[in-house]
Length: 308
Picture (cartoon, rainbow, N blue to C red):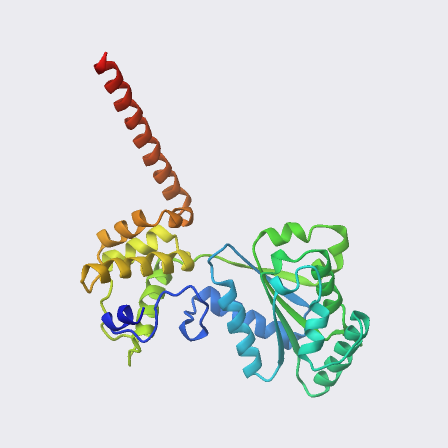
């Protein structure tokens, strides 16, 4: 990896899938979302649920939201739902506030008391939960408890949940009605074509440590950038995987610029990337495989008949 970075004169891997806040590219949709969270906290509303497909950058956005609210002086409890699938969210929040407790009921009371003290100082408790869609009954019940903590009819805890769209169906049960009423939904789409091109260029610029954002950096030519954007359909994770693989292909060949043909080779060499293609591209791949198999079968039949 070090040789690869030195070869392209990079300070960091530009298309790493690991969420890094310093490489965050703020699209128009992202800016609206961040503004919506700011308004949510100021208005002391119950919560919001950010819904998006895999690879749209929900985890990175959750980290950005948490960091921003910390910088604004609020108290933030960041929770990865994988650690609290069946419960433990109340305990996790209480622990982050430095509370000592014997059971979840006592933990909830401690949270309520701490939030009351924060409100007197003009501060808020924001609970950010990533991968909320994997929560089971115990975990979602914990969210309901947090959303129900109030004082003088004012909500003391703000919730921001990041989840796949399937989470809406999971919340459809009668037992989650109270939580549903306290949430509003925000859909996180893939990037537009213009945003995708800006995203790819920004990631390279940031990894290069360029002094000026408009500095002329041509790791990818224009057609290659456009092709990555088109194949990925604006999905940041797929763009990262495809662009990273393309850079490795060029590195192995001893060249410095990626062209459109390099993107094609990268895609062919990584079948694991195919499921991330836009639906119509998936159909083209399936059709190509089908035609290939039919051609092979015809050739085999011809060989058998010719041998008789």
